[in-house]
Image (cartoon, rainbow, N blue to C red; front, side, top):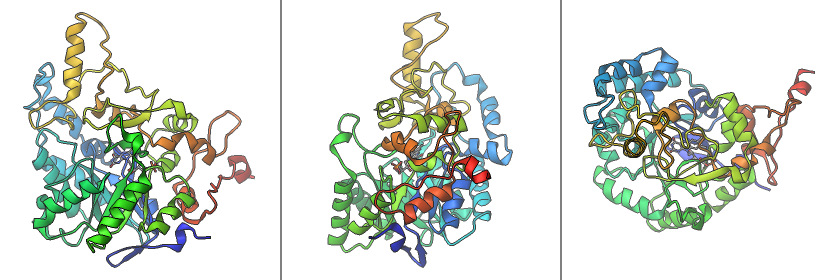
Amino acid sequence: MKRVDDFRLRLGKHELVPIMIGGMGVDISTSMLALEAARLGGIGHISDAMVPTVSDRRYNTKMVSAKQKQYKFNIDNSDKSVVQFDLEQLAEAQRNHVEATMNAKRGSGLVFMNCMEKLTMNAPKETLRMRLHAALDAGIDGITLAAGLHLGSFALMEDHPRFRDAKLGIIVSSVRALQLFLRKNARTNRLPDYVVVEGPLAGGHLGFGIEDWREYDLATITKEVLDFIKAEELNIPVIPAGGVFTGSDATGFLEMGASAVQLATRFTVTRECGLPDNVKQEYFKAKEEDIEVNGISPTGYPMRMLKNSPSIGADIRPNCEAYGYLLDSKGSCDYIVAYNRELAAHPGAKKVPVFDKTCLCTHMRNFDCWTCGHYTYRLKDTSVRADDGSYQLLTAEHVFKDYQFSVDNQILLPKAAAEQAA
Ligand SMILES: Cc1cc2nc3c(=O)[nH]c(=O)nc-3n(C[C@H](O)[C@H](O)[C@H](O)COP(=O)(O)O)c2cc1C
């Protein structure tokens, strides 16, 4: 019987364990998590979502408070077009994050950056270009283009000296999106080094409609992408993601012709994951009916999350002067519109809860938007419980190796802490 370790992912001169831990913004897929994947011979991702916040938290900068102070005069204005990111400072934050991570890298694996196009940051092209260039400058092994079609993203990197040597990949949810990406980026004469095919059971934002995501399945889309790539003789590794919960699930995709798998949910309850410990316990405890796909993200993409996320029905005032990552090129965000509508409908009210949209920046920053994969309700089967009812956190190495070596849909449980101490 085959297992994941019987396969290898080839990316240029690299031969890797075919396990990729997906990007999870804002610092949920931490450097520590990504570095463990690389140490164990696979691929890990850090994310550049709200990277100035990450820089402040991890590298002792003061970028967010400085921006908030600079634009304080605009707080009561619903037009946020004056609130611009300082591109040099954005690049510095990106370099801080990437350099510290790459300097700590050990082992034969790789560390990539997850880069979401939907973070339009009040100047979509300029900020994305700066994020991509700064990550390449700082020595990231590769960049995964996420949350968007990225029709112009290769062109934004074309003039960078590492454009042809860094590994560059794209996340798609359909063969059509891949075809469009290839057509629009053809002028740069460079193919992606890998394609992540993300199905409807993934965590984070979904590339499907809020009503119709159930009609799709990862195996079918993966097969369509594999067939297309073969027919076009493109030779691009295909990496399915979304609902790959056991080593056997992963092996099934590798036997089908995939080159690796991208995983996230099972790593959300590891020590290296950036979620606070109490939130990790919420993930462990979740039942199937506690998880929903909703439309509260101002990006316009559906998002899967725990129904008890504090971000649902919250009443916070937009905080774009400090953050502003989802401001479109006109300085607006769907949360600002929803918040102002509720404010006008309830004059003088102390609390103005908003249910149809959420202030994603503030909530992701505070780990209050508990986005998760569909199979989060199975996490309780991956660990043991202590006497107080809490679940034991896992190590990233434990989960990684379980995927790498397990067969027969088995999940390796950790030794109980008391047993380990004895
Ligand atoms: C908590 C969490 C946060 C995520 N955040 C992002 C993100 O910021 N960008 C992105 O492209 N994908 C994001 N994802 C998707 C993962 O990278 C991955 O492709 C997917 O969740 C894999 O499916 P699985 O969680 O069932 O293993 C996130 C997933 C989770 C669970």
